[in-house]
Amino acid sequence: MFDPIVAYLFESSNLLSQEVQYIRAEMHEHEQFLDRQQIEEEEAEENERAYRETMTRLGLVHDPAPIETDEFRQFIGANCRRMAKKEGVQ
Image 1 (cartoon, rainbow, N blue to C red):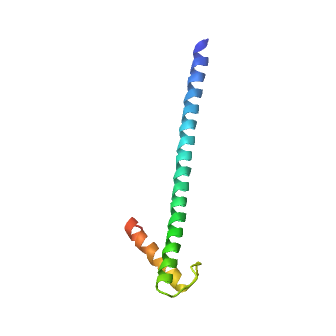
Image 2 (cartoon, one colour):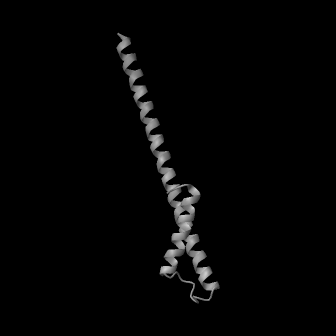
Image 3 (cartoon, rainbow, N blue to C red):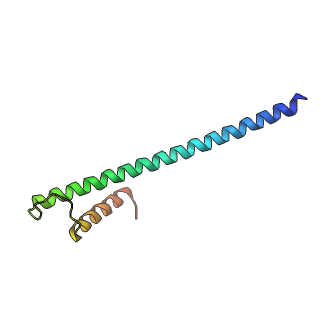
């Protein structure tokens, strides 16, 4: 009489355990995504700061506000290509 109940509880326990593992894996993946997103935002801010400092130092810009120019896009593009090479991305 108790065997079917015990088997059912054991099976339910296994299913719940698998579900918990799946949820943990999903949470870990989402945390990694958020970490990558934060790193990308920080790198973008650093690139923008470096560009402004460089342009100001060269005397090409007196206002340190970000300027969206072809030179800016090339500067950022070159930096992104260097980072991609470093990471082994094609």
